[in-house]
Length: 102
Image 1: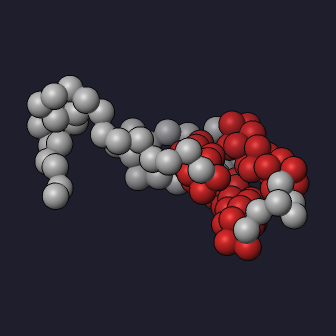
Image 2: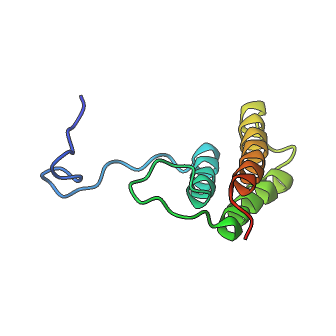
């Protein structure tokens, strides 16, 4: 059953949608989205200049998590974290290269 929140994002009851489970995948996803948003990579209505300092901070948080959890993750969790850090670092460099030098 799918609810339509087009008029009222919280439905008639005023209650927010159910929150996702507090797991490692969601933490990785949250930090990844924040980094992508800071790099201006998400299709938002307001196009903003990339904030490289903030993007770097989010990528560094994921890298710290990668280092501190090494050997304690499932293979799938490790792969998700490794892929996220590698891809974000690559996208950071690509985004930086696209901007004209100041």
